[in-house]
Length: 141
Image (cartoon, rainbow, N blue to C red; front, top):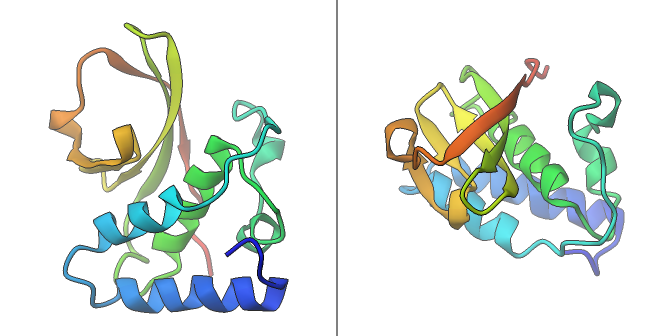
């Protein structure tokens, strides 16, 4: 997707959102999409509210940090009719056993996307993964 012009990236993203409306496994489909995005070396401070980037600005990037991928995943869900009423959060979390930071997208305090590229329920998340901060995504219009 990154090799495409900006307008074509927006189209690919719109097609993904349309696909999620009826896909039998929408969460697996969005993870599959996000796993193909290139991860770059830039870092943003996820604890700083000013780093909340609007989705079309994210699409203008040539690579993403892991936090930006979580943001794009969250925005994608919010901009579908199917999940537009859902409570979407980004959990800035840490695997305390491996000292690894991760950014999990949580939907309605139930579905968790992003842990080891899997779809889990909140109850299935290992106890060693601890939320450090929860960012409640504001509703999009």
